[in-house]
Length: 465
Image 1 (cartoon, helix red, strand yellow):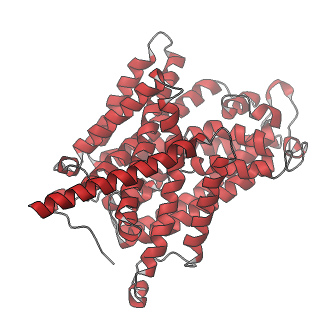
Image 2 (tube, one colour; image 1 turned 90 degrees about the vertical axis):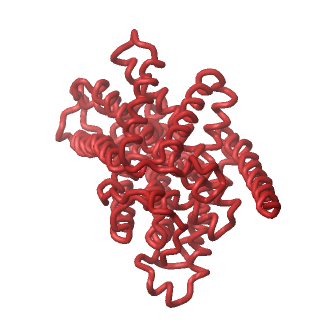
Image 3 (cartoon, one colour; image 1 turned 90 degrees about the horizontal axis):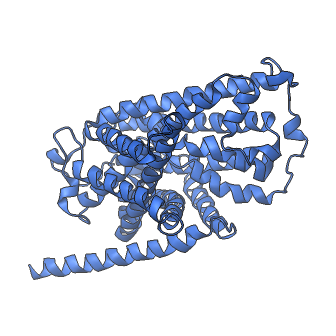
């Protein structure tokens, strides 16, 4: 089933990404400041066992969404992926809205990542302004994306490798410290599982699990980058299913393993108040230069997220232009297959988000951040619904001929849809995250209105011609 949009040869992306690039691109989008900072908050809120259950449910949602995306991306490996699927199988206005939601998500992430990277560098160079580092990293990320897709993928691969190795070392060293194989600092006794069991399995009941599920879903966002990169991947029918399976498996091991070690080594009341629970754990087990090590790791995590963010947002603008909803200049590619204009405008959008985070942190930037958080679940929802309608339109013979089929249809897309809707509803019950609905829903309405107004205008112009 190769129902591709028509493209001229010079408008084609180069298929240079390999399976290892896809896996690390997806992991790089997920393993970031959410894992390094938010895990402490989730443990303090839901308890150790509650946090593990919340992450397992979050992993289930991701798995269902990725199965749906996998079938779509193998059948139609297009750059822009789920936005084009939503246009085709739900409605063009929905696809247009999904693209802008996702573009805004990564553009805001790009702006906040540049700020955070500058702050990391101030730890070592306190006399140099954050803005200097922001501009330096802005130039670095731009160059990594503008050379070739393979150059971008290779840089993201090594960024992600650093994070993955750090988490593996953390889980192994932490597990050894839990059971006394590595001595604790200041002759403290090995904690074993006391910190997990002392407050009971669910110290605050089951409600916090539901509340933290929303944060967990946001923490897992980035896995869908596999779909964005589908149009630039070698042998997508083999690479995409393998990347999805291995990514989900590693995410479960990394996140659940991390939660277990953190919960066992940190008392629940401490977990929520420290800036980085990882640094606290390394200090407790007496590993020297823990703060410097983790400042470096967090810096690579932030740069990795910014790298992925510019890639994703640039491809979204290219895809909107390729479908005729943005000027043609956004869909032009260099001889090496790079959408220079789309990437440049996305970088400017990231700089505007960075500017708003300093000038209007309590108004404009809060609204942008809220919309981007809401957008993640909205995009996942569109993937599940697109997959359901995609399969509905196929004949039995076409279904048999699919190179990759999501199992247990229609259960997978329906259950994925239900869990995404629950996550959106959950936002309404959390006073801190409710602003995501207040800002996100009007933004969606505006996108639909703009699409229909511009579509009517284009139709009128075409008829007059």
